[in-house]
Amino acid sequence: MAIHFGVLPDDLVQALSGHLASDVNSSQQDIRVLRLPHPRTGVPSLFIPHETSKISSILEVHAVSPPNKRSWFTEDSVVEDGKLLVMTPIDPAFLLIPLLETTIPAEGMTANFRPADDVLEEAASKIVQPPTSASDDFISSEDVSYLSSLRCVQAVMRRVCEYKDITPEITVFRYSPDKVQIYLRSKVSRLSDQSISEVSRTMSRNLAKDGLFEDGKEELLAGEYSMATATSIVTDIFCTAARIRAACDLLSQYLPRTVFDKLLSSYDLASLDAYVKGLREEAMALSAVNMNAVEAKESKDLKDAGNDKKRKAKGSHGVEKLKKANVKGMAKLSSFFHKK
Image (cartoon, rainbow, N blue to C red):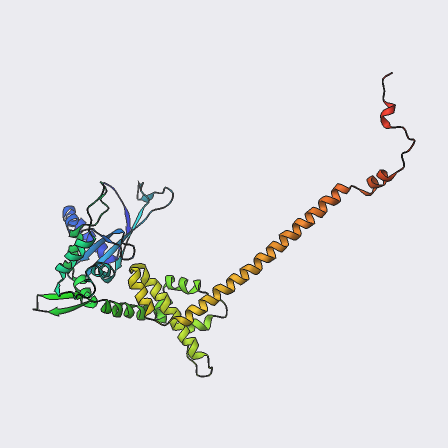
């Protein structure tokens, strides 16, 4: 049996341990792997639904494969495959948005309210294609339709769709791009909060990439408001824009390009864009100055090397004097060496 190492959330580890301790076969039946399109790229990716009486979530499966061959040591055994499987929770809304986008009717038409399973079945019919080879790397309609049975998906459908409760047991939905933007903006608002952005390494890297962690730029990220200076309001607005842009960039990893562009355009980031553009132009100008300095130094080095070569070819002072000596009437050295 193949052995793999994985990093999983605590609740899933406990659930798996319970299944394995009771019955191996039951664990295989209860844990289902779904192959769904990645929200940003559309590439078939693996997800695991995890539901208990208290928890309903979906985990994204990441495979971390080392470039060189590696192994794992576990107790007295060696696992030849050095791959690491990492499972992390993903917001079901990210999976639903690109699926539900396919159900938007043609321009001038209005979509009807339908149950969640009907909506997802339509989405499946538009994205699912039969496998073109023996590979199992394809998306099945069963995997897409299975989402409607998850409690976390049913809850998210109310956030990204218009809905009507027909009866306590029956609710119908219609995808709403406007509600999607409201939901995403609420995420941006939470992620751009200073207490959240400071602990996110990804957002910190994005801010550093724009030069906001350089010396002299600390006040742009402090978010402190002072009535003593006229620039404090501008600084506070600029700080907010920087964090909003970093939060949007973070969400872009799980959003279709069209949805992300619409989200980004809903914010006024003109001042931040102008600042970043100025930074890049300054960096390019500095790079050009450095390049000119390097080229000037190389030209000088080549010139100096040429002068050294000329000096070496000229010879020493004594040799030069001998070259100028009057040798008229002197016998050649070869005349002393002849056959007798």
